[in-house]
Image (cartoon, rainbow, N blue to C red):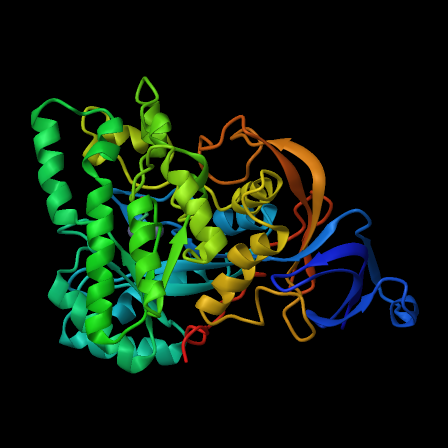
Amino acid sequence: MSTRTLIRGGLVITAAEELHADVLIEDGRIAALAARGTQAAEAWSADRVIDASDKYVIPGGVDAHTHMELPFGGTFASDSFESGTRAAAWGGTTTIVDFAVQTVGRSLREGLDAWYAKADGKCAVDYAFHMILSDVNERTLKEMDLLVEEGITSFKLFMAYPGVFYSDDGQILRAMQRSAANGGLIMMHAENGIAIDVLVEQALQRGETDPRYHGEVRKVLLEAEATHRAIQLARVAGAPLYVVHVSAEEAVAELAAARDKGLDVFGETCPQYLFLSTDNLAEPDFEGAKYVCSTPLRPREHQAALWRGLRTNDLQVVSTDHCPFCFTGQKELGRGDFSKIPNGLPGVENRMDLLHQAVLDGHITRRRWIEIACATPARMFGLYPKKGTIAPGADADVVVYDPAATQVISADTHHMNVDYSAYEGKQVTGRVETVLSRGELVIDQREFTGRAGHGLYTPRATCQYLG
Ligand code: URP
Ligand code: ZN
Ligand code: ZN
């Protein structure tokens, strides 16, 4: 039976505009918007009316970089698709794009099917997949074409983690050439992993085992160099490039220089690089392990360049790189050797709120908030306008957001399956009140009303920024 829902009295914010409008939802889609008080809006009737007076009405967030259940360093990311997508919903994110993993020696198909199986029937919100290429060879290059046709239109390569996910420059060039031909988008983890491994070995020989040395050996210059090299390889291949989890000012400069040349080079950063720093990595009693991720947190001075990049559009997307590991039993694997700490931070629940706080702090505008967190990731990964906006025909993935509510972020109250928060004790203004996913209430006035299995797998078109 079709349900009509009316969201009345809110300020609708999209990447393009802000308007006081009522939103009519029918059959899981946005049916119409009408300016408040107009005859059209007054005439609408609905089975369910949501009062959004004094609230924002925004598109559900699109988090284009998550790792539910990722195998890493002998353990697995602690959020399942069920717990991770439930936490996403709590945080106003209604679509995630997670990374299926190819194991070395195995096919892309096998890796992808394993990820379909992990997520099937488990998700509270919609989901899609990128593919991690761990083993670029003739067979897997051919498989890339099939995946693009199937709706897996982006591929992550690693210049880091030799022996695990690492690809050499030849493999990277071949994958880029293939994506230039098949329309796929290469996503790059840009750090010189070969050089980093030398520095790791030398640091450990000197007895430098604390988590803070993770930040010291993964040098800014080695992120900048890899970013530069990835851009040049993409130019040679004639392929577009998306650089993930950019953390260093010098890497932003490489992206800006490429974009100034008119190249199809895109960049993503994450809340941890905008709000946290090497000060966190240096926390005593091994607490710094909570903040070990790669690329690493940087000295605070880099944050200004990241915010600037987001304002100037040299960086286009903020994703979380949500990859949680519990402090107890998981991060602790690296006591006495920082290189054994599983890499990754939790954050899928916090992104929309932290970026709203950035609006209040004057870093970005309200529309830019929606652009970098909803509209651009949807366009970048072929989901727009189904996802990422509020417009007739779009999926009714809608968040009623209270811009005045205050909250203190804490592991005591979050819904991610992880025993600490990277933002513990941080007070932010703004909070998700109600969330609809394809017209169904999944959070209703701060109560979870969703269910595992509501979220649907969503195949994607190719990047919508390319000609
Ligand atoms: O530390 C991180 N980022 N862990 C997840 C894997 C990756 O490189 O994105
Ligand atoms: Zn990465
Ligand atoms: Zn990642």
